[in-house]
Length: 216
Ligand SMILES: N[C@@H](CCC(=O)N[C@@H](CS)C(=O)NCC(=O)O)C(=O)O
Image (cartoon, rainbow, N blue to C red; front, side, top):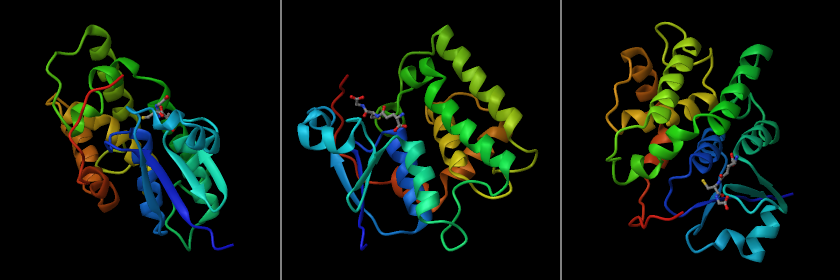
């Protein structure tokens, strides 16, 4: 079927999950349309999007008549729907690094909550954070750096032999610290900043954004 792809994303372009799905689509090189949904206006809870997306969260991917939410499910789906070698791979080919890439994706989505709150993505793309990290935020930042140090191969700016979507996700998390002026060891900073320059990532980072009105 001539299935078109549509990614439903937040209108401020600050969702780390929409970021990941966007980068995955760009890396696959498949044409897709972006549709933004205003969280602040609770558009995601209106019956049309809510029921089509199933979870009523962002991002969601529409492929033809098929809908899928949850960003890591989206990148895994894209890998299978547009498989390598015809399309660029999003996950390492070998079992163990592929499992670790999935581990990193799950971890950055489920852990580090104080850091995600105190260095929200709005502080990456709009106003920088003003308050210092709380002890809980600092502990999360320390843990992020400890895990990054363990995972990153010496002298490399990539987690595995081939680029993976986990590189983008981990770099995004580290940029909560980097963009807010926190000390990040040179080796880890070099990784995060090299990833940040990737064209698929820069397309997201430099995309036009409307003025930010705080919500939650
Ligand atoms: N685990 C989900 C998280 C998605 C998520 O939390 N999305 C936020 C926007 S960044 C959202 O939809 N918030 C509105 C809500 O939960 O009602 C994923 O990876 O896609």
